[in-house]
Amino acid sequence: MVISIVVISSAKRVQQQPVEDETAAVLTPAVFHILLALSDGNSHGYGIMQDVESFTSGELRLGPGTLYRSIQRMLVDGLIKELEIALHDESDDDRRRHYRLTKKGLEIAQREARRLADLVDVARRRSLLPKRAAASRPSSPRKGGRR
Image 1 (tube, rainbow, N blue to C red):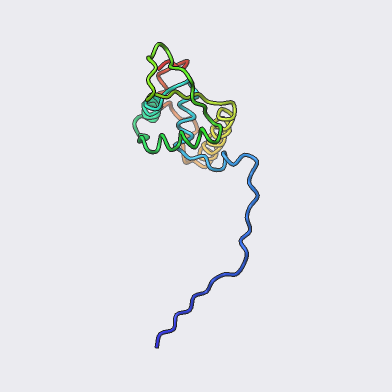
Image 2: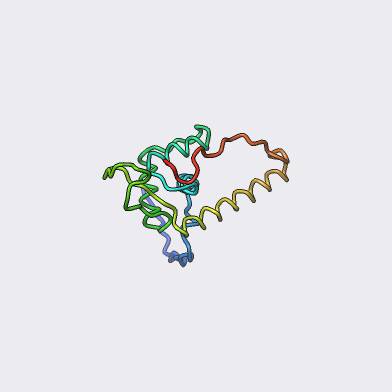
């Protein structure tokens, strides 16, 4: 005869109160890279993919699924907004949507950049990185939102 014992916890799970701005707590690398791409100006999805690949020297390639799921979440969270018109003499193509950072998106991106910079400072103090890092990655090739 085999007896199975299943123990189920009866302790109530404590639900945490939502943080005033939950977005910062759930910022994924993909979302930060998209914010970083849009910090240089407005762009469409494919342009964002190209920009991220460029400023990471090809180390990160956002696939369409990751990109558009992230964009949808960012729209809902108010980090970006979709523009109503085509940019820079592009024809109105319903399939090509253009995005812009919101004030909230810019603030979240700046906060995350400061957090990462602080971590890099700690890594330098602990000799994980040289004291002065050489510029190893190219900056974004586009300026002022031209795409």
